[in-house]
Amino acid sequence: MKNIRQKIYAYGILRFRFLWLTPCFFIIVLYWSVTSQVRAAVTWEQILTQAAAPPADNRFKYGRDSLHQYGDLRLPPGNGPFPVAVVIHGGCWSSEYTQRDIANLSAALTRKGIATWTLEYRRVGNIGGGWPGTFLDVAGGTDFLHSIAAEYSLDLDRVIAVGHSSGGHLALWLGLRHNLPASSELYAPDPLRLRGVVSLAGITDIRTYGAGAGVCNRAVTALMGGPARRAPGRYRQANPVALLPAGIPVVLLYGSSDTIVAPGQSRVFARAARNSGDEVELLALKRAGHFDLIATFSEHWRTVEREIVKLLQINGSHADNVP
Image (cartoon, rainbow, N blue to C red):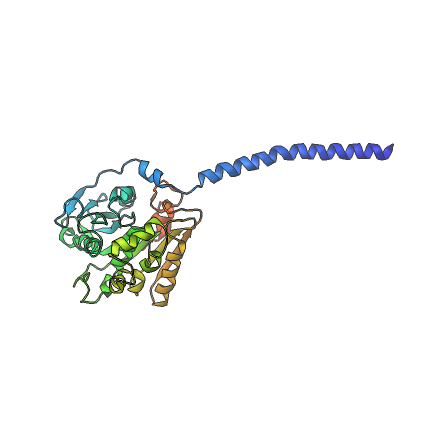
């Protein structure tokens, strides 16, 4: 009888523990479900539906095509001289996408004391877009800063390029174009030298990227007017990894969950750049997708902003000085 009572008691204790653990299990599952949704990668639809950025202070045409060859200048308060970020939007080099998609990023940087020069440029689908027009536009648009620097108190000794995705490719190319031979169609005798480059999920090697099967991967051929095997000279002139060393600091940020531009694009470039003697910072953003890096509402935006501020050494500071 005593053994029976002990078994009944043990069964009761076990049942009580099970009943206690059951709600805890469901609470844990619910918490995981909610937090995983909160941490879900930013979608393209969220970028499209975010509130429009405040209008720029000035819009300047840097070429004859007023629809596509212009830049938006945003200025922080004060008298300057202001450090400058040349901001280049992505979108698979396609005319379907515009600088509106990255304007909130520019406005956020301006609130940090950085003058932003957000470029629009001819893309695939625009007359004159693709090779060589797209490259000539981002180069000419950047060099246009020479003509407005004095009037708007821009510090041309502190200019960086910031680009996302295909815009990251163009930003890196801007930082490396001084290595082009004089025989290149893209050569400029006295390009505006950058202080550094920040690549946000950037395409760093168009040869390997163009071999992929995605929509953006296939856009490389349209940009370059043919595959790499048919235009190797063009690809050498347009491919950031082929133009190393940069001779300036490069920051490469990418999302660990990016399905549009594989993390390997940033990693391979970082390795090649370091081997060439360049100063490179490589940062993986955990759980971030392709668009988290340009979403100012993303949990990762503070990291992106910090790296840009640090590169420009605003107030002689490092990232800790970003409030």
